[in-house]
Amino acid sequence: MLGSYEWRIGTRHLRSTHRRGFVSFVAVMSVCGLALGIATLIVVLSVMNGFGHVLRGRILDVTGDATLMGLQGTTAHWRALERRVQAHRHVEAVSPYIEEQALLAHGEYVAGASVRGVLPRQAARVTTLAHRLEGGTLDALRPGRYRVILGVDLARALHVRVGGSVVLIAPEGIATPAGLMPRMRRFRVVGLFDSGMYQYDRGLALINLTDAARLFALPRGRVTGLRMKFTDPWQAGPEVRHIAYSLGGSGYYVSDWTDHLVNFFRSIQITKSMMFVMLSMIVAVAAFNIVATLVMIVKEKQSDIAILRTLGAAPGNILLIFAVQGLLIGLTGTLLGAGVGILVAQHLQTLVALLERVLHTQFLNPKVYYMSELPALVRAGDVLRVCGVAFLLCVLATIYPAWRAARTAPAEALRHE
Image (cartoon, rainbow, N blue to C red; front, top):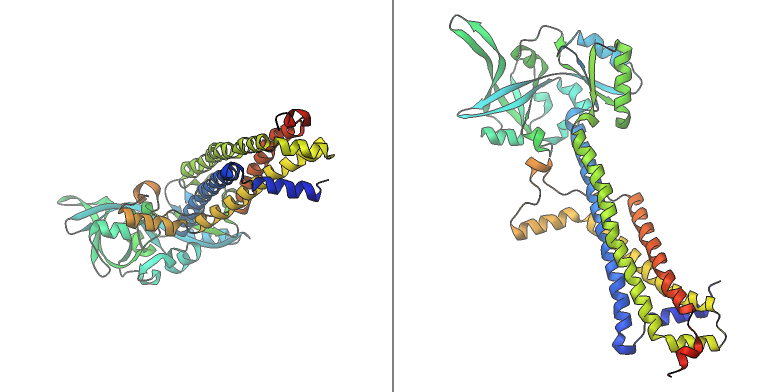
């Protein structure tokens, strides 16, 4: 067992003042290197977690947990279908929608976008997009009033503000004596939404379901599909497939939120695993600096070790003395790195915003990364895994120097004293 004198001697050696305190300086550098590697690994893993968490939340804000669509592009008798879907116990809310591609024009500015027709009250129960509105409310989308809510980047591309108007041009034309004319209608902009994802803020416009049916000339009782919200979003895929099978199976196409940007989610997970492995190498290098530190301490303390041996200390006691030093360096570096990493990750957005203001640049282009800020989410499991691996490496790094110190021969060490 570890006695009090092994602990006292081991800690005293780390405070060595011989050779102008060089050994103590090297020990401090070992602690700092280990802490820096651990902090970096925690911050990187937290950023990967934050990307996935924020991206998932913003997708659910706009799309809902799952959708049920007809194979022919539309679904008939949607009210009866809605009642049957709502009857499933894991479904919290259902909302019909019509979604088509269209052109939006404002003066000389034209932009393509998805136009989604919704029933405001039902859409608010399925998605949280109503909380992302910068102006207006979903209730302003009343049938027959021809009103529209645009994404902020789409409004910016069209150079239109709340209170202005845009012309929606449907892809289907109308046959007239003068030829084929596009189907179009003027809508008044009653609000803007900011989902935080450029893909939706630049490419989505919301109108009332009835107005969408008229604009796109859909037969009465037909919609594109139903959006659903489940009690557990993680079970949305199996649940929506179960619902489709119960409705007849072959007549519907289903998708859930994991299908959106599925490759991006997969790349985040792969990148997280790769970064853990690569940055663990940095932690390993820092941990094995402990070997050099302890070897120097053993070399410096040869005479002290010999004196302890002549006083009756067994090789096991010597081994424990130097094991204490290595474990103290590892434990201090691990705890310091975990604390710094968690602190930086929790204030990362503030630090990044400060750097962007100082450097007059933007680190994340929302057109490329789907978001403009750098989110971070610290998970206890990741912190424990990083700290566990780092401390294990420190334990392994301590074995050789401690074993070498235990093998010191007193006579050889005192020969030149």
